[in-house]
Image 1: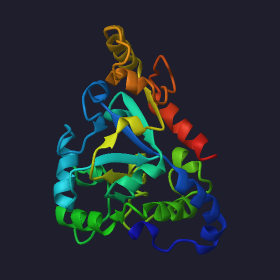
Image 2 (image 1 turned 90 degrees about the horizontal axis):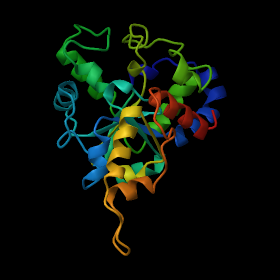
Image 3 (image 1 turned 90 degrees about the vertical axis):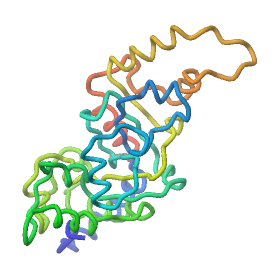
Length: 263
């Protein structure tokens, strides 16, 4: 894979054990714009692009790269541009899914105009970008091994993944030419929906939390013996990291992810 070309083997061997431990534990993070609908309506799962209203750039990337409609996550990172709530899922959830991963944001690779800058030959055109994207696809069941190598080879510490650019360049200039962290953050894709009830943690902005409280206030009183309502079932799971919500909901969840990985 171009991103891991000509790495410093000495630095890699020194850093790799710690990075492997982080890579095994790092949570999959998804920012969601329709959390109230997911809570209230069956099947209570984050849908793939075939069902949910994902952006045109996401759907275009899937079509050009030959990817099935997917649910999208970042490894440990969260972008508030995508919605007002964020969910984290433990590594174990991958065992029930098929999918793939890429060491950058595929929507940014294939958007028009491209969000991610690259230095490709013979031209930086759609054909070259499709070839580059396909060359970097990773299997869902082994992407964490590549991620561990990336952490060890491109950062002085694992914590830098959240706070700094990688400290070395790649042949296509993905790191050199971009300042957006989505250029070097691993994107993970599931071919099937992901249940929100399997979350390990979540957080939201004030408007989302206010709407969930409104829905809860309007719920009729529970009848003894009846199954829990969708809201009750959701609230029975892990509570929001900030009960009143926060405009920094993505930052708050990223902090939690780092705490879980003992970084």
